[in-house]
Image 1 (cartoon, rainbow, N blue to C red):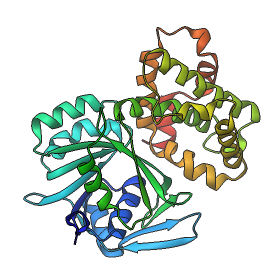
Image 2 (image 1 turned 60 degrees about the horizontal axis):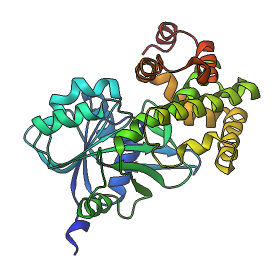
Image 3 (image 1 turned 135 degrees about the horizontal axis):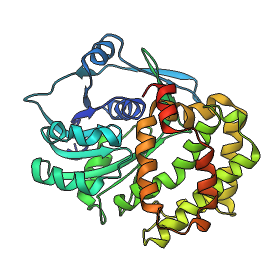
Length: 330
């Protein structure tokens, strides 16, 4: 058997909505999977299994995994760390203590270079990659709800430059046979900086509409699209290459722009879709959204205001972060 296709020992550190589907995928591919979570969540997963309701597919999967609250003394072939950006810094010592050859940080990460340098200095992992999984959903008491159109995609790669063929083959083998696709990016730092240009305006609109996209107006959705367009223009003016390539085209007038407008229309007509794609995350990740917002605000403060009219207009309609923390309790 090809050595890349042998089952591997994999650790998933953090099992929220994103980590749950990632765990499901590597289990589906035939690997031995351990998840590192808090003690209460570990007990629930060990008793009930990893239960995921795939909303659009109308089916439930149950995976038997090992859930633990400590991995002291254990070694893994690969480890995926899936947690909000603002929690990542505090977890760095624990992340660096993971004994693994391959380490992948998954999620929004606007301190990627800082984390890269810290891990390189303090971890023995030979390969460090960054990824972003494109899926949505919510976490319930005993199961997860996943929103996906088909195979879930992870945009993944080195912080800078192309990932070598051998590393690609190793990572792809971890998902072989699963409904999961890897999209290799040549510059994940640019990708992670660009991503909020698309998601922040959706978040602003979700908060404006009190977490219910069906109450949004056509004018508000147009303002959201225009705000993202301005944000991508800002990034390009700062010399940042748009990643993934062509992402900014979803906020222009071409065919991709039509597709984005259709998606927003669906989200506005069916609350469950809007919840699982955007609103549920916004309700449960106020701190993360605030930190991303502050990152962009700091970098936009010297940019001409007349080139951010839609962005500023949309953002101004949003409730204060303080009130959102009080409302959603996070």
